[in-house]
Amino acid sequence: MTIESPVAVRGGNRTEARVATLVPPVDIIEDPKGITLIADLPGVSKEQLQIRVQAERLVIEADARIDAPAGVQAFHTEVEQPRYRRAFHLSAELDTAAIEATLKDGVLTLRIPRAQAALPRRVEVQLG
Image (cartoon, one colour):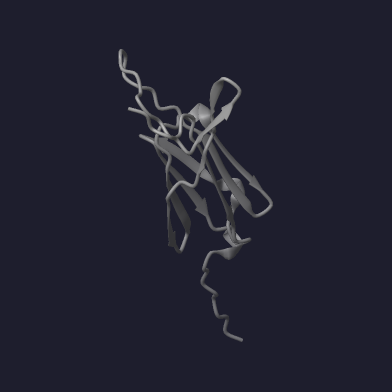
């Protein structure tokens, strides 16, 4: 059985696997204190994950490693070395210096709080 793969590039006598860049699915939840971003990154470990913030731009990049069980060989793989990349423009009212990130079972959760100046506050009225 032969399967033609659209992600394999023929070069000379060998086939080179392409590194595909995938856009991970993301859920964004907003509340009064900030936002929570949840991204699905199957096959990604902490060491393979990069999260960068520059100015008001958040970039998530990761290389996935999905190993076959011992003694098993893949018959066909369309993406041998998946790479994830997703970028977001962040509001200036978010405190990018206070971002918290957790990765568990291939799910990345980022908590980005609002800056103190952007949080709702109560104004006291003085009697004059």
